[in-house]
Picture 1: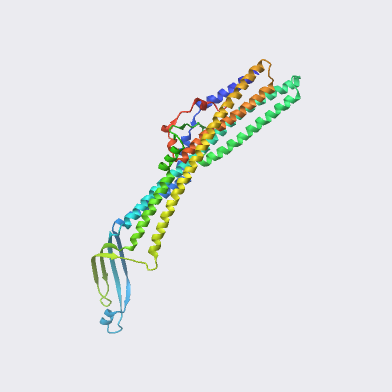
Picture 2: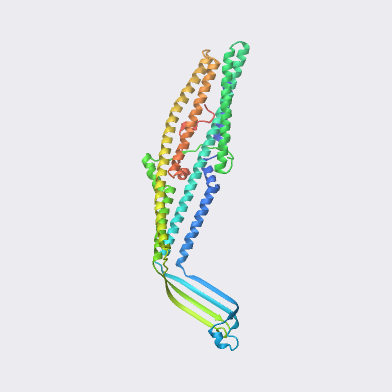
Length: 449
């Protein structure tokens, strides 16, 4: 019996030494890797780059537009000039060269260009917020995968230690049965406990493989070293209403939806300018060279102010304005929807965190109680007042309590980061300057029961 306790102690000590000395990958590392490599983040960045180019495109309307054209070839002419000069057919042939250059500058367009530029800027800002929101989403997936894999690894090691302990008890009981110190019923019960321990080890091995697959999908590769337990955020909302208020002020989804409303408002203003004439200035120069028979050389240089006014009698302008107004109302409705969705996610996340905290406290008390039972049974066994099967049963119950506590403990971590993501504050919460050390209860080795 003493040999078994020594072996268990050495196993636990070795695991503790591994946790304390081996290099470990942090949650910040995993999230940073996920954000930097995930395709959805790259797609959001590309969309933002496209929005930036749209701003450049719309802003270019402030500057003069230069157009140049030239043509050369042979022409056939039958006009008043050719008929006046020709005494045979009334038509003629000639080589032609013509060049034309024009510089056009908008003078006044009733704010059309300015509104289009402002609309493009608002969409650029919305695209920037979309990048942040996508990064938050990927960060949450990476955090959940990290915690899930950490939990599965922890439980896998707990199950391995438990299986070793149960197997040792079963072997001792089998020896006692052979020597006549115990009956077959106790051995059957011991075999049942052993099967339960083996089943738990198999189940947690499966959970570990599943967690590893989720981690690889979120981060892009398997962890190259052990995982380090993450810290809890240093700053946290005092209550539910405070969490909702923070999200409404700073959530990337809310900010992006607000910019979309602003953009559609500028779009509507730009469309309304189509009812009014646009004024522009133009400098142009044309030079043509052809035979006198067709028309001779020509030079045309102009500096003019133009007023262009186009009105669609079929109602196209009215339709564009009405469409812009409808798009603005749609953007407002989508903003309201974002507000509701964010508030719902925060309320659900807050309730989940509150529940897991209570479960953690309950399971901690249960784990402490079962650990005391094991210690008491060990003492009583040494004194001959308990049997191995009773000690085996106490160990199994302590293991179950340890697993339940671990699930609740990691559940608090997962629920905390889920709530921070619902508030749009996950990435700031993961920075090293906004984290606090864990309590002593969270620093226990994964293999300890």
